[in-house]
Each structure stands twice: as structure tokens, then as C-alpha cells.
Amino acid sequence: MDALFSGLVNMTWQQGVMLAVGGVLIYLAIAKEYEPVLLLPIGFGAILANIPGSSAIGPHGFLTILYEAGIVTELFPILIFIGIGAMVDFGPLLEQPFMLFFGAAAQLGIFLTMTLAVLAKFPLHEAAAIGIIGTADGPTSIYVASILAPRLLAPISVAAYSYMSLVPIIQPPVVRALTTPAERKIHMEPVRSKKISRLVRILFPIIITAIAGLVAPVSLALVGSLMFGNLLREAGVVERLSKTAQNELANLVSLLLGITIGATMTANEFLNPATLLIIGMGLVAFVLDTAGGVIFAKILNLFLKRKVNPMVGACGLSAFPMSARVIHRMAQQEDPSNFLLMQAVSANVAGQIASIIAGAMILALT
Image (cartoon, rainbow, N blue to C red; front, side, top):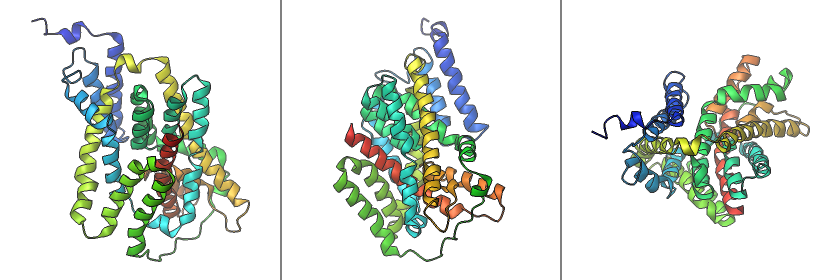
């Protein structure tokens, strides 16, 4: 009889707050459709973990087992990257390789936020993990945090996925603040319809993996899994494996990853000033990364005859394809005849690669 109603009897106000947080995440996922594939399981995982005496966590809890098997070992983020790689078409980027510079410029906020975190008395390795939130890349944030700052994994991962889902809200005001109406109306040269050969598409993931491995071997787990997924897509001879990576693998691992991350959001770990500071600095990193891409495009325009629409620089984040859609929509609002989708997608795909390389650099340097 002692077990009956023990959850209600032993409930603390902190756990009640976390149950409410889980409910809010589920509401945002269902009612607002903000990254429902991730926020819904994260929210439900938070509820499971914060009911006193929950059998879902602890030595024999299935969520603890999943955490140790998939997060501590970094397995879930790696498997997610294989699925992402199989989904991504690098064709637009191969047609416009200069867009890689926008992906690189949009990582500026990572290193500025690292500095802020160090000034806030976080150890260097934890500061680096906090800065990675600015990539707007959930799997990279989880992978880096699980290695450098396991105790901060919950707030870092929740912040990363939350800001990814809030791209349509966060990016437009930052872009408008840094650009003039005339700049937002700049038309870019249409992407030529030249066909990227199958050989180039196949060689691209192999060459990128080799270069990344030779420069920073620590990056191979991240870069290699993304490029392996892309090779499955482009090879053309393993369609079943490619479709499995895009669908069954990506969906299953997203489900397990989300509910496991949610289970780390326990009241004693989450409700403290350090967590709120981390979430705030994550927002700063996200804003600075967006600003970095836009400012880089504006500087580039000082030297170009054919100007670049600086809004495209904001797509250097890894939030694919949300950021590209947001920027294209903004261009259409300014001038319905302005079509920036292909350029925005190119920069967004470049951000996918750049965010992984940035994560690898952080791991190599800390």
C-alpha cells in the first residue's frame, strides 16, 4: 500500500514545475508544430523523469538504460547523422561552392559565446559545449556536450532543439536589424541548371571525409557518419539502405534520442541559475551566429560587382531547411519577384557541414 499515491505524496514544487515544462514542450510540439518530432518525446521524457519514484529512471529504468547505451556512448547522435546525410542533397552547394564561406561565417557566435561562458566562470570544456548551441544543430550539440560537459547535457540539448524550432521567430528580427530594405531586395543571379555529375556527387562525401580526417581525426565520427549517409543516397545502388537511413533509422533514433534527453531534465539538475544562464547564452550564440553570416555577406558586398543578398548569410546555420525557408519568405515579402530559395538552401547545406566541423574543432582544441 505504501507504493500507492507515493508519487503524489512525495511530489516537490520543483518536480511540479518540471512536469509543467514537459507539458509546455508537448503543447508547442502539437499546437504550434515546433519541431514536434523532437519536442514531443523530450516533453514526455521530462514528465516520466520527474514523477517521484518513477520506474522509468534509475538503475533498472529503461530511460537510464537508453541514456547509457545511446548518449554516454555517443551512439544516438552518430546514427542521426547517418540519417541526415541520407536526406541532404549537396547538389545546390556543389553548384555554388562559394556558399561554404557563409556556413563558416555563421559559426562566429560559437567562439564569442565560449568567451562569455568562460567569463561567467564556466570551465573551458563546459564553455565550449555551451557555445556549440549556436550551431542550431541538435545532434552536434548533444555529441559535444556528452563528451565535454555531461552534467550540462540536458540544458544544452533542450536549448539547441528549442532554438532550432524557433528559427522563424528569432531570425527575422535579427536579419531586419542588420539590413536595409534595399539590401533585402537584392536579386541574386539565378542558379544555373547545370547538372552535377553522378561521379562528383559520389566523390564529394568521400573527399570531404578524407580531408576532415587528415586535418582533424577527431571529426571523423561526426563528418564520417554524415558523409556515409550521403554516400548511401548518391551511390544509386543501395536504395533500400538509403531509404532505411532516411526513414526507419532517422525516425527510430529521433524517438529514442528525444525521450532520453527529456529524461535528463530532472528538477534537481535543471532548476538552478546555471541552467537558466546556459539557456540564455545559447540564445546569444544563436543570435550571434545569425548576425555573423549577415555581416560577412555585407562585408563581401564591398568587394563584389554582383551583390549578394545579405539575408542569405543568415542561412549558414545548420537549421536545415527551416532557415532557408524563412529567408526565402522574407525575400518574397520585400519583393515577390525575388527568389532566393536555391541560394538559401546552398548556404543552409553549407551550415550543416560547417557546424560539424566547428564541433570537431572544439573537441580537438579543448
